[in-house]
Structure formats: structure tokens, C-alpha cells
Length: 247
Image (cartoon, rainbow, N blue to C red):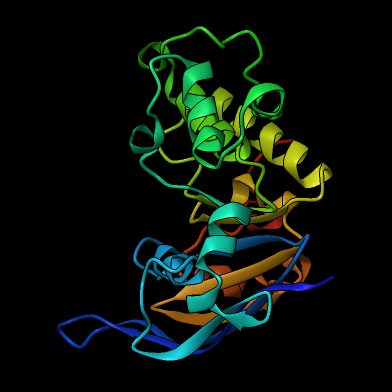
């Protein structure tokens, strides 16, 4: 598959000199479902901000589709959708339908094409029948799916989700997982940033673990050992780690 993102010897130093990202080299191909795991503060969100051009590295380089990121920002805005942790900040419309139309309309999509983009996003985010609902009346899980749908309405090739399960109850988590399954089945590139790896571990085709701004694991999820999780402050997603549980 074609390469989508590539970071080469990426470093990000904060004003106090502390390293947020330390010498990270990483490539992600189109069509992958990548789980980027790490405890809070590991550098997951910061790394993705560099991938979409929202942060500037102290040293190193970022490429999108083989070209330096500085020349690719307009293409990234069209092809990459980012669902932030704070979903309320991504909701602009007075109704669900109005919110979903906002993004594609700003990309110049109108008429029947806009209607189809909204319909498709409602379907993929499992929000059918909610077009006329006011966002303020939605549950936390429904708002999270609306934020995802708002991104999908712009028809991205890649979707990045930052801590998609935070503060959600179990039924809402299940709903988000079903949305991710739909997107994976459609062949979209998925990058999920989370410390709650047990919720999405089975959907990942690749696992990247960050710890203090460094990549400490990058391989098939099935190759990760208990120690790989525990040493990075993550819960082990394997049943064998919890022998006291009853089936």
C-alpha cells in the first residue's frame, strides 16, 4: 500500500527544554488500522499534531505522501479527518444535519453531493434518525459519534481519533467500536490514539506504543508481550494477564 505519513528523526522540545518527542521515526501506510498506545503524556497527541501540520518540530522531518508536509497542508486538510478529545469544540450546527453539512459545505460541496455526504456520514456513524436533533440533547456517546460523522462528511481517506473512549459508558464505547469496524471495512486508514487499548486492540492491524516521547514497540499487536504493556504503564489486554476472571 502507498505510504501516507512518514516521520524521520522527529524531535519536539518544549520551551523548558523537556522533550515531548524524542528521535521518532515512523511511517504509516494507506489502509492500515494503527493503534497508537501510551499513557497520558506519552506524546500521542503531540505526534499526531506534527503529522497534520499543527506543530513544528524542533528537528527532523514529516512527509505526507512522500512530500515535505509544508507543501501538503491543503491536501491533508482534504484527506485527513481528526476527531479531537473535546468533541464539543467540533460541533457547530444547531441540528445534527446542519452540523454535518458545515464541513463539506466549506470544502465547496453543495446540492445532491452535499446531501449524499451527510446521509453517508449519518449511516457510517450510526446516527440515522437523528438529523433534526439538537446537539445539546445528545448523550456523550452520541456527541462523540456526531464529531466522527462531521469528519466523515468531508470524505477523508484517513481518520485520526484522539482518545475516542474517554468519559464514555460501556454502551457508548460499544457504539464507537461499531463505527470503527464500519470504517475499517470501508478501507479507510485509521489511527486511534488511546491509553484504553483493551477496547480497540482486536481491531488494530498494527500497534505502536509510545513512552515519554519514544517509540518502544512497533509491530503486529499479537507480537506484544505482557511486559511491553506493563513497562509503559498500560493495562495488558490479554485474558491470560487476569487468570482470576471467570468466563
